Length: 496
Ligand SMILES: CC(=O)N[C@H]1[C@@H](OP(=O)(O)OP(=O)(O)OC[C@H]2O[C@@H](n3ccc(=O)[nH]c3=O)[C@H](O)[C@@H]2O)O[C@H](CO)[C@@H](O)[C@@H]1O[C@H](C)C(=O)N[C@@H](C)C(=O)N[C@H](CCC(=O)O)C(=O)O
Ligand SMILES: Nc1ncnc2c1ncn2[C@@H]1O[C@H](COP(=O)(O)OP(=O)(O)OP(=O)(O)O)[C@@H](O)[C@H]1O
Image (cartoon, rainbow, N blue to C red):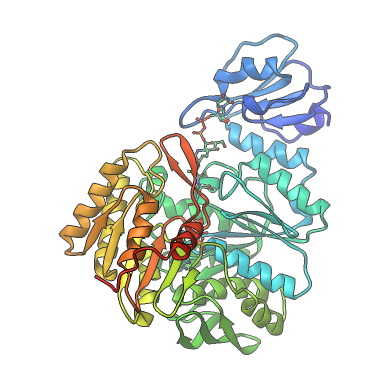
């Protein structure tokens, strides 16, 4: 593509060098520059600075560089200075890949918890209605039956636009994607054309980036100014109600869903069972009975979010009902990985205090024996990390009978310090706990200590198949550990 066309709508501060030159690829990481005539975008990051790698990018073939700062390079290289390199990257990626979201019904899902499951419920409903739909989520990107892994919940704009273009090429008409608050603040979704935005809920998370709940809320709220057709909002969530007031001033139509408050789309007559829930779905165009094959209130909410989206897109109540009941499990979301007459072992991605509380509350009414919880708290720096660890510890102390405190993804932090902080907080809240730094040993200990009627909840890593300790990523498969344990049949006690 010709650089002059690519930068046609780019708002730049300074331009130096030829613009009638070819752009063969775009990169924002010098290590990814592979071909001559690459356009390299230098991003001033949190940990490093892309401007430091401009020479490396040029030596590998970059001939156009987007910068935020003054730099000196050879006159054969085109330098374009912009105010915000991440935003420029998003614009250029959209144009480079042919504005793919003009040809997709793009549905963005944001909120602290429930984004992945909402996306999968949406996928199932649209497929039931015979539609082609792609998904971009923490679990990976799904195009057709192919699931590919990605680094972020919401990928950087370059990869995102490339994925949208792949979806268009595969004749996909709809895309349900998770939109993280990082993505909104860091311009990853700028220039993506969202038809629909969905808000699930807001509770403390990612405060290392957003500092406080107000900033976190404002980050999420940006999505609802980017939508052209529908804003779909959980009316039972306090931040959802704030968002409803904000959205009532926008031209985009909004639809509310909920259980407790008046909402356009709501669930009534809810019956909870150990492995599913039943409810009556009420919409302005009729009622229908719904079966959700994942237990607890959270999946009533997540299905209502998905249903509201399908309803807004005029899908039938019949397809909605069938699509919801066709979801029998979602990887790492309340996934039962072992069940016999004595014990049930569940892996769940609960990694926030709200998620952990909801997971434990879902289990409690159906636990004939005790609830044994294996959990850690992933690394978060400073006061934010300390606050999160004690909040999750208090939830564990209150709602689990016994916790085995262990490592999550400690990354560069000292796992012993993290575990000590959690266990001190459990102790202060008068909960029961053991500690095992090695997560495999922690899981095995919980299984050994479990007795008839007990439920073992392994929380925090869900679908993940590795653990990050220091800078090393080590393969780690919780389902496999549990299966191996029961195959070996070692050391099961009759309870402690
Ligand atoms: C905190 C955060 O979001 N960081 C993102 C940010 O990294 P950064 O600013 O620290 O990058 P940096 O290391 O300072 O490097 C600056 C620039 O120099 C470039 N570079 C660097 C080294 C080199 O040799 N050459 C080179 O060109 C880098 O590619 C980058 O463009 O910009 C990078 C490039 O886009 C992202 O990959 C990176 O996401 C990291 C991997 C990350 O872990 N992010 C998490 C916190 C995140 O985004 N999470 C959300 C929410 C998850 C949820 O749902 O809970 C998500 O959407 O995934
Ligand atoms: N509506 C909800 N309210 C509170 N907790 C929830 C809700 N839905 C799911 N959870 C909890 O959060 C965990 C993660 O769920 P899910 O993956 O759907 O959320 P998410 O928003 O996509 O999170 P992430 O972006 O971190 O993957 C679940 O395993 C569950 O414990």
